[in-house]
Length: 353
Image 1 (cartoon, rainbow, N blue to C red):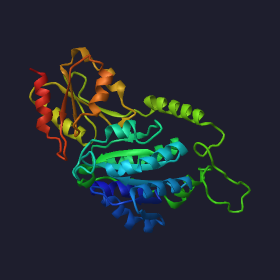
Image 2: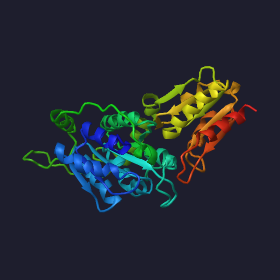
Image 3: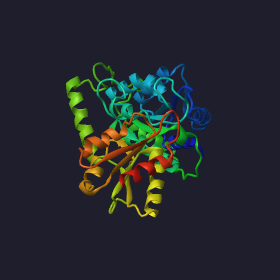
Image 4: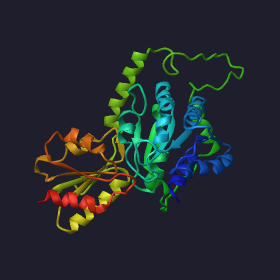
């Protein structure tokens, strides 16, 4: 399957019954797929009049208790940022997919990884955070899409699937999960007792004002509660791949599609007699600081941070964890160019000189 289609099909199988989006390259296959698929499962697909409108539609559907999703690419995600902040403030579980393209501004329609800082640090106003999952293969994209819906409901928060135009448009064989039954989908919605469902003759009159959907707490109390939640994620939600690091003298580190390229570079370097290893965050928020802290940093020749972003963004988080205890170099690409493996290899070989 194509990456965009695999994500959309998995979302449907995970019980997503509302999708709103707006066309933007390179993620147009996502709304196109939902437009065909949603009527088959009694779901709702809406092409909004704008990115802003479609994100707010997803907000409304989530407030009604429906597993909801929206997607876009880079500059389109920026337009959705206000609604995403409102989702976080209202504690609404929405899955958002970003198939990154080059920037800033309208940039290019080719793949990039230039939204890292936005995704992990400033997805909207108010200082909120989201769990951010970043697959490097289409099978991981399938698995993480399913996981994203589970995590969104678990924490009642928006969750971001951070991909790129390359993984969105390439094709690979995948194993799809068994779909939830309609009874299971209904049961999930029924657990959301906070959801706005209309009066239906019931005695409860829900009036919502102030921060979020819980009117019993103040803004400061909600901020404190969220801060404690984000801190807990650093223990409960860290996820990364650790590949051949036990005896490594050089560490390559990257996420998403760049992590896949870096892994192949590790194998080539090992074939040359260079003991290379890989750390690949699967979730880029929370950042897996412990993956780097446990390394014997003082004996390493250095770390190569690979990403499709100029200037580097992901590399700055690595630097903040390493605190100067070993040398850090970057292997970068931008402007819509896929990171060339030779760029990573040259940076790694340079550390051995």
